[in-house]
Image (cartoon, rainbow, N blue to C red; front, top):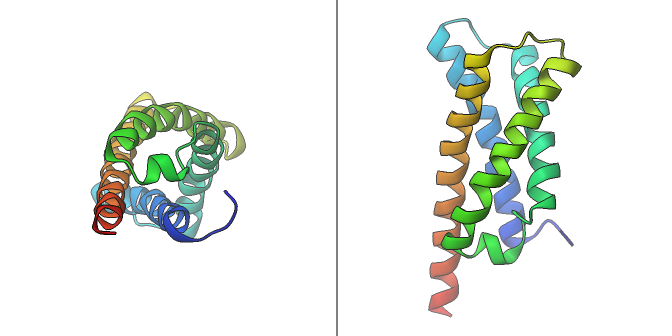
Length: 132
């Protein structure tokens, strides 16, 4: 992660948007309303866990970002670990109750959104690279 240029920056921005989208969808689905506090309580622990685990598992390397196959092998596994860690952080740091359904849904929904986003990004970068 030398600098915030090219694929790395696109991945980071898109990933953070996925983490912001999740509480917005949840608030919409449950008609509970969305507040800055509710967004932060959900987005921050998941985003930090993803940056730590995704970074450790090389989900931000050029090899992964430019390869749809590597994306599909790396991102889901890294997110499953990060999702568990993010839920644990959410419970401990933000004093949220353990709700099994939320854990399953948060991991599952973000898994689909994050993997789909990253797969599309990898296809785009692979196509751009092939045209060169």
